[in-house]
Amino acid sequence: MSKKTWIIGGAVVVALIGATVIGRSLTGDKKAKSDSGKVTTLKVAHTQNYVPYDFVDKDGNSDGYEVAVLKEIDKKLPQYKFEYTGTSDDDLLIGLESGKYDIGTKGAWYTDERAKKFIIPKDPIGASIIGFTIRKDDKDKYKNISDFAKQNGRLVPISPQNAQWNVIKDYNDEHKEQPIELTSAESFQVSDAYAWVLENRYDAYFDIKLSFEKAVTDKDGAYHQYADKLTWFPYKGIPTYPLFHRDSKNEEFSKEYPKLANNARDITSDSDNLYNTSYETYLKGELLTYSEKLLKLYGQFVINLAKEGKNLAEMTIKNTALLSGYKSLDEAEKNN
Image 1 (tube, rainbow, N blue to C red):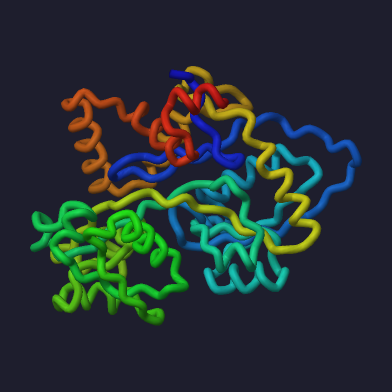
Image 2 (cartoon, rainbow, N blue to C red):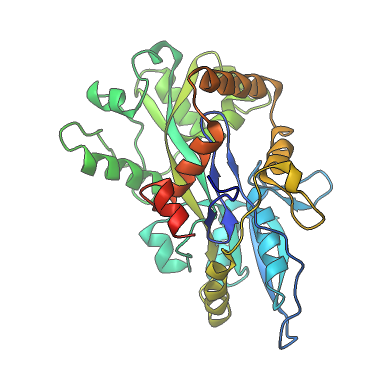
């Protein structure tokens, strides 16, 4: 196994299993001077509260994994200078479309509609984990998406404009013998979706893991009062992409973006130096953002894997290689 993790679109995207999230980075070579000396400023918008992916820290600085990736990309492109703004989802998308911002990062999934409005690089910047929020009373009934489909689980309606609609549609296309009933709806409040599940109007809400944790699991979450009644199980990781405003300047930048995938962050901390920080060190920093409860769950998860003789690092790299489109680790190794 190589000591290098796989690169996706200029950022290392490590698909952590279970209670973990996505770690991303680039090697930190010193920024070289551009040949022409001309520097183009790109305005980068990111969501303010999507911890740990994109957020504004207590000192008012732009932070998060996706922001960190873009900052590393900025180091490698001396002809560009990035200026960061934390904002709302709506302002980010409207601003990108109007040209107020050049780049937007919000854990965005690929959709045909977005591809018509924005430049989307072919390689993702990361991934988010999607799954099902269900009643705790049904945790033994629905352990995975197959159980949910086989038992004709009722899913909270999804807007066809929502990227989650395509995820269920793709599942149904691959499981025509036992599809999930997919009902369209206009947008609604998350609180409605949780209430509908609790009221037994529906059996599950198709929900992003981090969103569920922030809203329900976290003791300060807006819907923490449901923590003893709702639970969540995973389905799959969905690649996420930065979005670029469509103009000639950003068309040029989008050509540079894939060229950054030449080097990866080393795995272990014994390779740390002034310009490179290992994935081990980076992950330790991530763990500091976890709650005590989540750390305990993660620790138990790792212990269980060890008892089963499974290697978490190898599983992580294998899943990242598969997410990159490779059929196996051997194929990924040959092509990197």
